[in-house]
Amino acid sequence: MYTRSSDASRRESSIQNGNGIIHMKDLATREQMHQHARLFSHFTIDPGCSIGRHTHSHETEFFYILKGELAFYDNGTEVTLHAGDVAATGDGETHGLENRTDQPAELMALIVLE
Image (tube, rainbow, N blue to C red; front, side, top):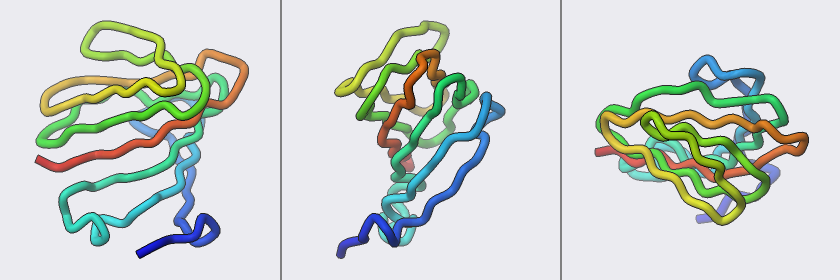
């Protein structure tokens, strides 16, 4: 199976009451992931935009930072993530992301179901 970039589903949305709009390119559908995951996407987060803090239940979300720098809220602690860094938020944990720089940031997001 393969999907050409030009054929990938694209959408823009505010996520979890964050600031601004997040640009998303879906890399696989739930059916293609055989119901083991609910999201596999490429996100672009523009300067000043964020994914609001939220808690995951019965799933784990992974972020792999491709480009840029993001402030990552991780269960009460804030760290700065850079290209090549990975973050994971599991069942009952809370996280959020914010781009405080003047350049867009890019990441891969994968949500695996319990």
